[in-house]
Image (cartoon, rainbow, N blue to C red; front, side, top):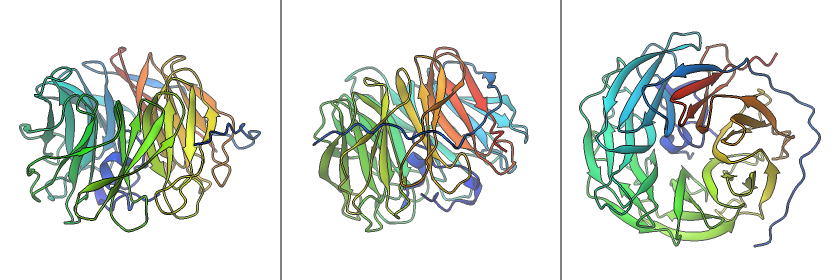
Length: 387
């Protein structure tokens, strides 16, 4: 998997809850596959916990202040908080920015085309309230943001992603809406304001996760939706930001997060879901046309609810990092080639991690991890110390 060519995102790994959702990647029978013996290892220093002003619902990473280091942004309650990187992988609380309603997800990208990173937040005013919104905060380039602008989306959004869905070279927004059982697309006018919402059915009774990528190899950005009824649903883009159902593919129990990446190294984008009901990860390998082989499942720990894809051991294969709510850990599954994953290594973080992102936070050339934690009102940073 390759990141969207935004210079301010260099060094940022493509992950399921933050980055892959925001970049626009161009990006049944169930079999249980036992993990192969672990040989390669990855190491992280003990987690450093950074206090935040509220609990975290989502976590994103990007160079928000333009100094070349990756900062963090956490959303929770009705606000966005930016944590500024000192340049060594330690973080200090910076600005807090109101988003108006209960924030449930966030995505990062240059929405107005000015070279600075912006943040869009999905907010909800309550189940089926009919007043749910995408809130856009345009970055000033110094770690601060302009006053928020709002656009109506479907009912009870759970996550938000950004990509160039309509092929006009700017980043659009999409939310997955649990209450209205659909996906809302907001087409960007090119200046960080958005046109009339388009809604697309998901054929899901409980959609709650979303990721973007070119799944069928036609250079258009498609969507995949995680459905709580144990499937990943593909929405195929016609190239103009209109989507058709491309089929549902079985995964584990209650997938809480979905991510895309070339896990088997064959040049197309595969899927991975974190399954909170079965305590495992499902990996679905792409046949090259947005259809997928039967899932492979790998144990990760209790209550996995977020997933990131990144090459954590620098061997050229994309690995998996999963936030486990039960034991308060991040489980790392190293890819030993062709999507064969070693047994999980677990690294402790603060109470109840609910989001995970990856990036080179300390500037040493390898990829670190960070989690947003709920209800412990903190962000945990794991610095990669692998030799």
